[in-house]
Image (cartoon, rainbow, N blue to C red):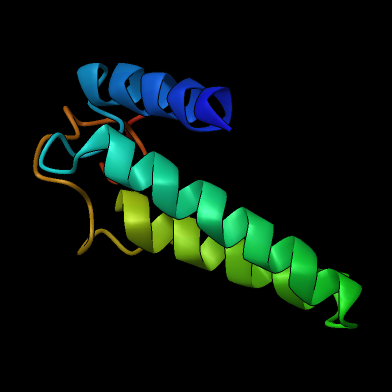
Length: 93
């Protein structure tokens, strides 16, 4: 279980250095949140919730947690995104 949290924690920290994830958030807290949600979503799948609904909810939750703009919405772009290209009109990532 320790590795299951430390691996995403490292990945999140690396993405913070690249400006893809807000550095205002603690990487370990985000990692624990993601692992917890993933485990609960697997349980919901076993209980009969549809795969497509779970997939769309997972994507939406991750976007909110990590401050990723959705459908061209630039209002939620992290302040330190370093013009990642996802939120800057006309710029390629």
